[in-house]
Structures are given as structure tokens and as C-alpha cells.
Image 1 (cartoon, helix red, strand yellow):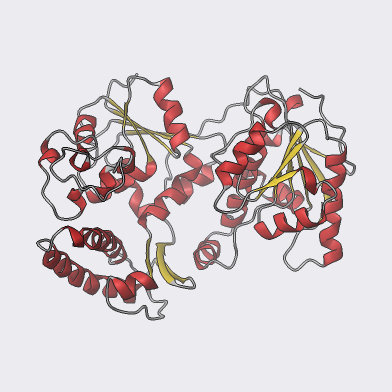
Image 2: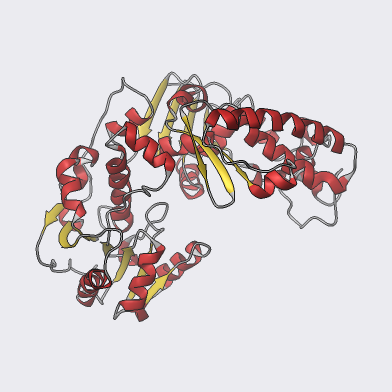
Amino acid sequence: MSQSRSLILTSTKLLQEQYARQFPSAWDIRGQQNYSCMALQPGGEHYAPYLAPGATVEEGPCHFGEGCSLLLGGCTYYDRIRSARQERIVLTNYDLHLSMTRYTEGLGSFGFLACDEAHEVPEKLSSAMSAEVSEWEAKHLLKTTLHVSEDPLYWASWAASQRQKVIRTIESYKSSGPEYYSKIKSLANIKRTLDQMAQADRTWVVEFGKDRVRIEPIWPKQFVEPFLFNGAKKVVFSSATIRPKTLSLLGLEEFDFFEYPSPFPVSSRPVWYVPKVQMKYGMSYEDELKWVRAVDQIISQRLDRKIVIHTVSYARQKFLLANSQFSYLMLANSKGDTAKVIQAFKDSKVPCILVSPSADTGVDFPGIECETVIIIKVPFPDTSSKIYKARASEDAEYGPYVAAQTLIQMAGRGMRSEHDRCEVIIIDKAFGWLKADFSHLFPNWFLTAVRKSDTLPTPLEKL
């Protein structure tokens, strides 16, 4: 309708593929790891037999200080980038867009920008601007050690000095032959990290892990215009869970906010609040067993369907598996096999129960793949994180906002169309005060489905 160049941004590869199907005229561009490097294929000017077949542009010689004639034409990735700068409708993801606007000339100017899954934008932007250096990188790439300092200005100065060393080392390696390619690539990557770290000021937070240091801006507000909007004259944020609060976290004060009712019947998507237990840190073994018994009671009435249980943490997942009478029906993922376990759950026959702390976003279970969702605990963010503490100290609504957003995402995994049917059962008493004190952080379509009950509800009719 705008007749201007338009950019569509979304958050995951699956959603990008969905958009590509819905908008076949959009120019779909993805990260370098999705394109074969023609220079490294048999017959290519930089063919290397020791590389695995199907080497991608991410592994290409252009990252090792080597010249490549395909950069001017014939590269599967850079040709597509050049074409994207001429296309009227371009489709890509937040990570690629933010990276390109930071380090290159970007994808050109756009009159219209559509940000889908917009509830993720504050975190996406903040994460893209952060910088992290591990002890291994410091020792093996920078030939130094990481000192303990919580002063962001110290790390800005440290990064600036280290950056000069890296530049000199890269130059010295460029004429040393293929055996130095991997070192050059690693140094180029750490240089980008140091470039970002050198921008830090007093509004950034330093956080130490067991073997690394991370520095991140408290708020991403100053990066919205140059890196996200990049000159776009009209921007639309779209999400089922977005709130005015989302825009305020980005520093946006003037906007039109439109909220629409859900097309899904409320009777098919009830959210039951059944206050069974106060979930909190340091619960006794007896109190932990109370929520397990509540979960088992819910399951016992629903053995004719598939169930997804959101545990929020792996420790709680482990406790449920160890104490539930229905553990033999449960599939549980670890950090490395989430996609595999989720697919096994989708392919399984009834009865089957997915128990996971990491199936709250980016996955859906339509139809009979899930007809009951159990939320054990309100998903408040990790309060030990320094970045969380800094944000919460400046904005008392930040923690409740994050919890509400995550909870809504959890609740929506099983209800995917107007013909679907899925009940949600929340047993944590904390939901009561979260809803009462921060109802404005929930969309109306969600609130209209909430029902409180002191007893477990009767299961919805089976699909």
C-alpha cells in the first residue's frame, strides 16, 4: 500500500520460511551459513580438499584476508545482498539486519519497516549490541588475561588497546598461507567484539561468568534509530503479546497502539488459575511434592491427550521426573537435544507428556499435538543477573513485564487456530498478584480467557 521499499523482519528461521511462502515476491536473505561458498567447491579458485563438502560462505576465504574474484560477481551470498539493495520488498531476520547495519552499508534505505514478533525486539537489540570475551579468547587470541573490574569504562579502554594489537596481528598473518586462515578468522571475530566493547559507557553493565566477561547496555534505546529503523519513515510492530510497555523499553514515546480481539473462541482456550502452591526459591522437599501431586492430579484426568508441562528450570524438570507417578509417559529435553525431543513428542501417540523448561517460544503444537498446557511456575527472570538488577532498579515493572511476556508465550503453544482447542492450567499462586497488580502488561485477549478455580477444572472435550 505504501508503494515504498519495504523491509520485513522476523525472529526465527521457521518464521522466515513461513513469510517466504506467504510473500513469494519478497527477496529472502539469510545469514552466510545458509549459502554455499563457490570458491571452496571443486573447481573453485580456493578449493581446499581438507574442507568438508558443502563449505558455506561463512567459511569462505573472504574471511581470512584472501582476495576472491567472486566478491564482485558469482558469490551466492554477496550477489544476493547486492540484489536485495535493489528489491522493493526484502525479508530477513533481526540478527542479520542488525549485523549488516552495524558493520556494512546495510540493505539500503526503506520507507516501510515491519517488525514481526515485536515483543522480542528490546532483547534482540540489546543482545546484538552486547560484547563477550572468554578467558580462552583472551589467552590464546589476545595473549592476555581478563582482570576483574566492574567499571564499563575500564573495559572500553581495554578493548580499544586490544583492538590495535589484533589489527597488527591480522596484517602479519595475511601472507602466511592457508594454515593461518582459521586464526585470521578467529581474530576478525574477536575484533568485532572489541569494536563493540570499546563503545561502552557508564550506562552499560559488566557481568562475569565462570570463564568470561560480558558487557551489555542497560537499555537499547540509543540503538533503535541507527541500527533497527535505519531511516525508515513508517514502522509497524506486530505481535500477539506486544504492549505499550514494549515500545517504552525502546525509548519510543509517540506511537499509535492498536489492540484486536482474538479470533479464537474463548471457550476453546480457557486459562485456568488454580492456586495450589506458592512457588519460590528454597522450597522444602514437602512443599515441592505438593506441586508434583497437583500436576499428577491434572494428568490423571487427561490420559487421553498430549500434555506440555512448562517447568521454567531444568532443576524443576528433574524433580518432576523423579517424583511423578506418570514419569514413564514423559519426554524431557536437555540443553543439546531440544529440537529432537520436541519432534519425538510431536510424532508420539497418546498418552505422552513433554516436560521442558525451554519450549516456551519458537515452537507450536497444533491440534492433537497438545490439548493441555500446565504452567508450574510464573517465569520470573533470573534475579541474580546484574543486567536484570540494573534494569529492575530503574524500572520496577521490568521483571513483571518479562514474566508476563514469557507466560503468555507458554500458554499459547497449543492453541494455533480458530479450530483448535487447548486449555492452560497455572498452579503458581504468584500468578494471582501478577495479574491483579500488572494487568496492563497482559493483552486483553489473554485476560478474557482467565478463570480462577479452587478445584481442578473438568478437561475440555477431546479433539
